[in-house]
Image 1: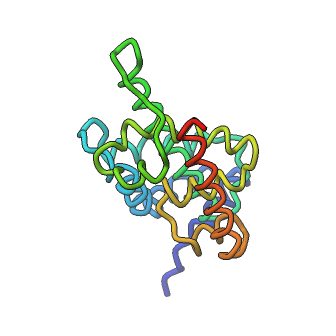
Image 2: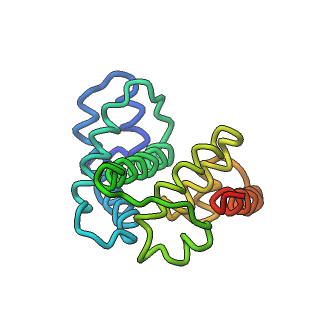
Length: 188
């Protein structure tokens, strides 16, 4: 009888314990889900300047280069992967549209950003990222919830599992964070 394949959590724990061979087993198990995350992040990106495969590979390389992360489970891994993809895209956009290259980043309302995400997402991402950084300084959990919901595309229930709170708490904190971000992005 064939031995069952180890799950992502087991591999991450083995890797954390110093088993560097575990890293070879990890990529085949997580690649499909990383591609799904990358497609979610890139679905708003109209330009073909960043491909799904490139985003997955860049995120994976950064993930496996994490020496200080205490991997807990697969949820933790994919939460961090979503965060890294967001950072990669923001950095990519900033480099591409820097002021010295004629960039035109502007502050916008979060509702407007969500509504026009398919056409103006690239202009809004920098303003939203900066506002999220300010929110994280005040309330890291709210910023994490926004990141997982908006950038990661997670449901209320999935976000609750990642953050470790009830779905009701996620709904409440999501609404508070969105209201704060709307006000912040309007510049009031």
